[in-house]
Length: 87
Image 1: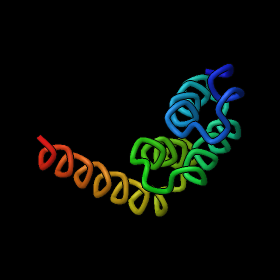
Image 2 (image 1 turned 30 degrees about the vertical axis):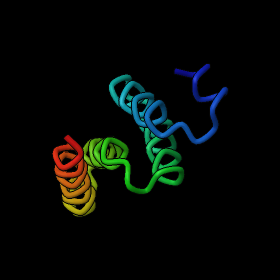
Image 3 (image 1 turned 60 degrees about the vertical axis):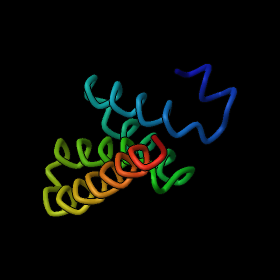
Image 4 (image 1 turned 90 degrees about the horizontal axis):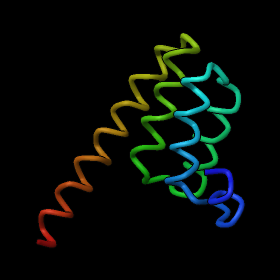
C-alpha cells in the first residue's frame, strides 16, 4: 500500500485501506490521517468515510461516528444504485 500511495498521490482507495490497517494496529493518529487524506482526495469515497467512522469509534468520539457512518451508508447506497442503473 505504501508504494501505491507514494506512486499515486491521493489514491483514496489505498489510503482508506491503509487507514484500516493502522487502526487495527492501534495506530489511531496515522489511521485518522490516512482516512482524512482519502477524503480530501475523494470526498465521495464511502470506504474512507467508514474508515474514519471506525477511527472515531476507537477514539470514543461517538457523536461524530453517527454522522460519518450515515454519510458512508448514503454514499455506498448511491454507488450501488448507480452501478445497477449502468447494467
